[in-house]
Every structure is written in C-alpha cells, then in structure tokens.
Length: 166
Ligand SMILES: Cc1cc2nc3c(=O)[nH]c(=O)nc-3n(C[C@H](O)[C@H](O)[C@H](O)COP(=O)(O)O)c2cc1C
Image (cartoon, rainbow, N blue to C red; front, side):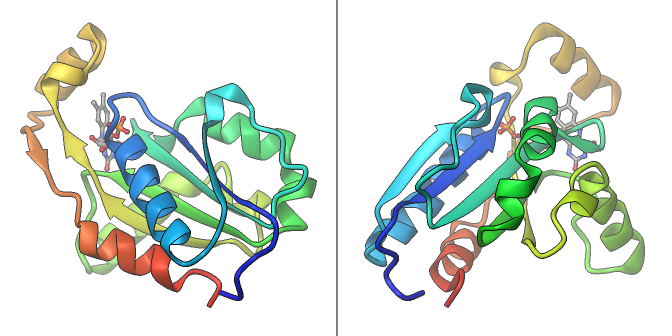
C-alpha cells in the first residue's frame, strides 16, 4: 500500500472479544506499514468522513454477521462503496477447504456481500471461550456441543493485513 496520507479505519463487531483482538492485530500491522489507524466498535456507529480506507469485520453468531455490523453496512453503503474496503469474518465452523465449507461460510456474508460489490473478504478462525459468553450464548454453545478453543492464526491475520491494498 502506498502510505495513505489519510487515516485507515478498522471497525468491528464482537460479543466475546476474540474479534477485538484480531482488529487490534490488523491495526498494529497497518500502523507498522506507516498508516495512521483508528480502531472503533461498530456499535459506536463510526463516521466514515476523512478515512482513506476501511477494514470492517464481524464475529459470526448463528450463521450471520452481528446485527450492528449489518446495520452499519446498510446505513453506509454509498460511502463504503466509494472507498477501498476489506471485510473480515471471524468464526469457528465451516473452516475446511472443501466446497461445502466454502459455500457455508460464504453464506455468513449474505446480508452484506450484495451491498458491497468490490470489497475483498477474508475468513479468520476465532475463539470459543465459555467464560466470555452470556448465559444464553453459553446454553446455545453447549447445545451445539461447541468446545473451547482458540484457533486464531496470528500469522495469517498479520499476513493479510500486511498485504492489503498493496
Ligand atoms: C452462540 C454462538 C453462536 C455461534 N454461531 C456460529 C456459527 O453459526 N458459525 C460459526 O462458524 N461460528 C459460530 N460461533 C463461533 C464464533 O463466531 C466465534 O467463537 C468467534 O470467535 C466469536 O467472536 P467474538 O469473541 O468476537 O464474539 C458461534 C459462537 C457462539 C457463542
């Protein structure tokens, strides 16, 4: 990436914090490339004015991006389509290289993909930490026999952020 003279926004939606740590690693990598970076929660509805580019990410719950992430894309579709945008999705299931997994994880973006025609998109494996879940999420996680694990691949995350828009 040519060093951008305007800042880059890294904005994300999380429930249990795994996506926040991934957003921080992306921001660190971009900063190491000479970018000025702001990191903001999508819940805070960040303004897009003045940014050179946007990295937009969400954790997956029940097969979809979190509602505040979908709402943000809907509310800012025109502005997002006029900027370089990269999407990252954090999830635990459908991680294989086979067609079934690829189709299933592509469907996680069904609500946002058609609105952002040019954005590039990546999938990162996340983390399941029962101690960070709400009571209801814990019940659901146990019901679907989820196991605690941290599958985040920091090398993959940093490599992706290091190569963005280059
Ligand atoms: C209630 C619940 C539902 C989930 N549903 C899915 C899902 O449908 N597909 C998937 O791949 N991962 C699913 N996950 C895994 C999360 O996407 C993963 O743990 C992610 O790292 C959470 O990010 P966060 O810590 O930023 O909230 C689910 C996790 C929970 C707790």
